[in-house]
Amino acid sequence: PEWPKNGGISFLDVSASYESSSEPILKDINLEIKPGEMVAICGRTGSGKSSLVSTILRMLELDNGSITIDGIDISTIPRHKIRSRLNTLPQEPFFLPGDVRLNIDPLENKDDDEIIEALEGVGLWDYFKSKSGLDEELVDDTLSNGQRKLFCLARARCTSSSILIIDEATSSVDSETEELMQKIIRTKFKDQTIISIAHKLYTILDFDKVAVLDKGRLVEYDAPQAL
Ligand code: ATP
Ligand code: MG
Image (cartoon, rainbow, N blue to C red):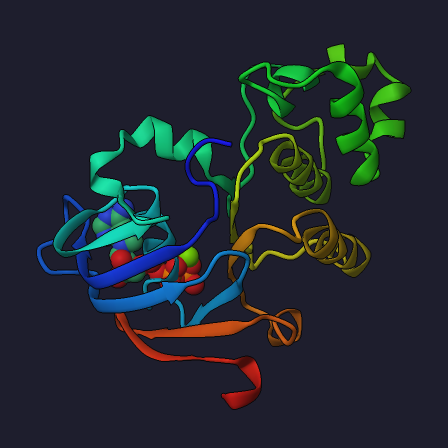
């Protein structure tokens, strides 16, 4: 498979800012995530969690330091390539104008059977089957909040990658949907490196590591039991 094959991520002395920000938002971050680990990112609102994962997608400017994925400095890799090779579940699900097929598999890598299987896996296939199936047009408010999240999970399953980045929304889906999502993440993405911004402690008890941010600094990095 293509880069990143293993999904190891290292931050070395990283300070980063947004174009519009005058001072660094992330300060002196050192972080080593091994291939296949599940790492939670925690911290108060505004502490820099979304910014941290955004630096992996090269959405912030580095003022200092470097980030490598499988040993390759990501500043040498075009943004579009990084974004197409890493799997992300965004805080706010988004859809392209078009049908279900396009929205699950925009790069047209999968055949219909695989797309249907991914939708079955998140419990959405019956819903679309009763409409126009994969040809069903997705208009902005067709799906409920929970269905949108599940849809993004099906999309992620159809993107082969060794890394899954999750920005868990605070606005919650119902507990049944959340349980289903947690289960899918642990079974279908088992071999991937998972970085998850987590707001609820009970969802990260089985994670390998927890990174705690405070005002843009990494203040803890350890197993959840140790914190
Ligand atoms: P939350 O839990 O509310 O999602 P967070 O930990 O994800 O918070 P960030 O969104 O990373 O926090 O924000 C960290 C800091 O960066 C905040 O001070 C915020 O104002 C600033 N910030 C976030 N996005 C931008 C942006 N696009 N441009 C400039 N500053 C930003
Ligand atoms: Mg955030």
